[in-house]
Image: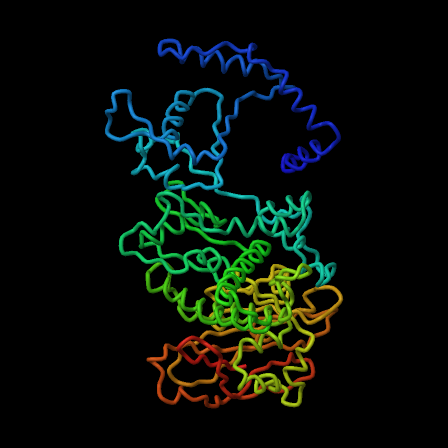
Length: 579
């Protein structure tokens, strides 16, 4: 089948001697087999035409397949750094070598020639500008169909050797939390490299690809009076907390273009090319790389601070935790103030940042004895499964933690406290991905997101919940029947009011197993993210919120929702969480 052509070529070249034989066959073609090209102006085009015809004639095809010539120019962005003038130095503006090459290729529009330009650092606004900004009149003609939009589609979620990505009830948690498993999601770049080299070497490659490159004119630092703040963290946080850039700020548009060119951000580009839309899809391997880059960034700063001093691993880790808590919110707030990042719903963005920080701190605390200076030290693995209790312990202030952990189910006041019900439950929260519809509010969908170590950003039609964090309740193999969730509502209320959310009755979240209803526990969280200056006086102190407990039934899932407001650490504000 045509869809398997790539794998057929791969398998063919992996067979003994096939690659060598192919190269030997290509080397047999001698330059003397083709006519010489006279670079004189009078015969140049005729000579090129004869050369091309000779090349086509040398190709032997079975059947009626039509022959054509494919030119490909690798790393073609280098052609834009060289400009050419006319011999007398006149002209309205100099042409780049890339523009000159495009003009030369335009003479062969009717020939069976196809030119492909490849680049790992492609500034789309330079290479394929919109018609209004094109450098030739032919490109500015609205009636022409000769200009092709750039190919920005990439193969995605193919899985190794074209096999399925995951199979329910066949994967253990150890397998799911491995680099090889994570690499099967997203672009095939990483898992294909793992066939030939060590996993950690491939991880280093991924970390290097997230570095924001600002070379030559591709920089904002040259803008007078424009101060940048922690710009190297931009691709990392855009990938992890789903940042969207403002489309009405030149600097923001420039940055998004730069992230597409240098930092693995994907792009959607309409045919008219008057704008682009960028984004980071769910790629667990790349997100793990981003998490390690972020940790290394903070660890390097702390090591410089402690240079010349002997500090314990405990003290070092505590200092790194402080940077997570203080610098990440401050940095994103700066980008919001500078107009680089779309404010959207500020509360939702703040919640995503808080949850991401809590997750990373929980991971760091699990590696509290980790010392990167020892030869046997393992890299911190952020995609590991983290116990729910440890995650909540890093999210909630210590003074209020016992209140939450000892909370009883709202609909079964005699049930097990939260710390007992979830003692063998785990979360994986390295990034957040957007849900397409209400199907995400099912245990089956949560299983898919748990495989990716992702939380779910609720679809716009989900008025009663904003985020879903999949929970895996320990079982030998992962399946929908071992999944639950933390359901997060982000509120902006000036007055206290009860919050009711029943995911089993309203959404049918839990799947019956063999026709028998399940009673898996789940957690609901309401995060009060009201700006401090708008809070009424009563909100400065935690007060009780009245709830009407549901009727307890034997087959009803246990819903944990405390009746008191619990404070959560947040910069310059109090965030209330109801569980």
